[in-house]
Length: 360
Ligand code: SF4
Ligand code: SF4
Image (spheres, rainbow, N blue to C red):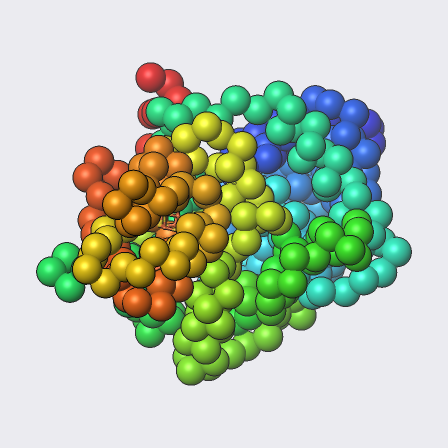
């Protein structure tokens, strides 16, 4: 019965999608046995799609509402189930591994024996999964980068979905939590930390309310959120999120630890795997050939040209704007890049775009 529930989680996680869906390998079973009790695995397998009330879930699972409610609450506290509210009523949903369950494990920034064990198991699962992963460059990207909007060329139209600050303005509440990727690396090996800030993972709206409710993050005001963005941009971190216009999180990522950027870097053409829809453009009069932009580029997309102006390899460039934001001479602006599709509106539209591209 327990074995069956864990095995069924493969299908459950595959249906939920994301970057690391379930696969039938030993590392998967070792991980899910640490994350889920057999009862929690069985409940997770029976969760209906989307957010549902405890009473709807009770019916799907075959338990009474009184029985299922505390179990769902405990699962939400463990980060293996999401929770929210529809009016006055609590609702719950099953998240994918990434983005979702893996991140929730480390957002509190705690360092317990269980955290360290989970960090190791998640790492081993990801390594085993990546060994067999083939990133198709024609697959619709499920993640995207948002460029540093203050570096966008003045004449370009700046869509709302290209501006992190517009998300900060429009969403309520906002929350910040510990960077899951850098914290996970620290839990495995204290020495592996790259020195970038940890407290820069932003959540928006329902995503923020969830992490606040479960003690995985803390509520912040708009001013503090803007300060976190500025600090991240100064450190050369890349704004990454789901490839849709409605977002619920924004990671500020380093290429040494971030799961999104590391996967892109492993591909010969990172710029086709994840992109912002912008590219850098140089003012040769202003450039002093200091090479700061080359050093800051997280994708090794830049080299110095014969005329002492940097050259960009667009197959490697993800359009993050980190080169432009760090240029001491303000010699770089980001301009719209042709051929990058507009992010789909919401979760459903993104899922359909990914599915259609894979079926081609
Ligand atoms: S950082 Fe600016 S000034 Fe320095 S090489 Fe790059 S574009 Fe030129
Ligand atoms: S050249 Fe490098 S730093 Fe500049 S936008 Fe492209 S990937 Fe980012």
